[in-house]
Image 1 (cartoon, rainbow, N blue to C red):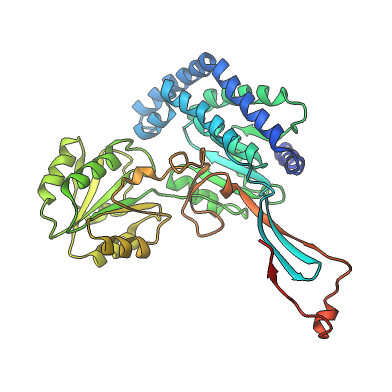
Image 2: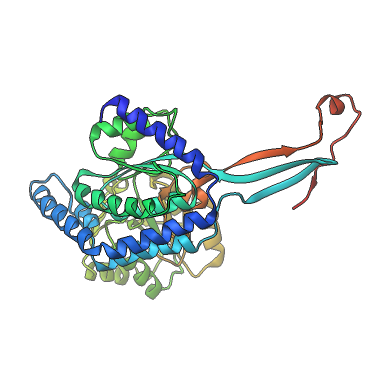
Length: 419
């Protein structure tokens, strides 16, 4: 897309976001139900497009141009389609996050400060493979009153195009809903153009590998929300229950190895008596175990697991804080005090006790869906759902009040909270 055309596209999205900010919950919910029904009615058409992408992707995998993990994310089956449609309905059922009163304070008699949630504006979403991302992000953007420009990977171009056409048809059936709220672009040049639109795009959210995220962060002035690597850890403490450890570690590695919340490094306390049985259970699950310091930074996205024996809880925490990507970590222990120390001192978006790292997911958190996982320390961290796509503004209501009265001591602030 030519630069002037993309600027116009981004400008239109910005204008749409302004209109969307005042759209009622009822209209947004009507649109969401239309989308869910439209997806249901067009299942065969979507599967047909996905099969075309899969056939083309098979050649890329054989030629070494596409990883098997990305190929797996590309597949749409009946279960994924069901979850995709259900995800839209789940977002319909969630409370509207816009217009919530977060704080109300009377600064002085009749002078009332209100902190109220509002949309971010225009989101630029760049993602690889997973075509179900389109419905997740579109539904979240609509419910949170944000416009969005989507750029998917070329490997899922056919599926992406059809899904967006199905969604746009559903939007057009509600005349009160603004035009240009959802836009899709396709070329690599479009990505470069998107990253330059800091005047119109308020937030970039990348969903992909480390190289993609790094490129985006280095080539835009727009704030970026997301994560690069998904290097997650599980620490099996000295007092861990062997059966719990086996269940959790095997699930975290094998349930969906290519997911960003799959465990990549297993730390085992040297005094844990069940170490050999645990490792044997992991191997029996088809996982290759690697003892190699060079692997501490490795995200395999496969049935390969780095392993290290540590001498203490402190060593485990130090290792995680040095090598983790800040995504999700878990401790397996029967010692409640050690669990609390671990959860307080590990600096990641998600820190768990006796559960699989695979729980780090917007749907499993009850967010309906997510636009991604954030390892940032800004307004949103962890799975980013509806609330993560809102910001807030302050409004102040008074009766001709002026600062001079307070500066001269004629009046004094009361700062009385009303909520």
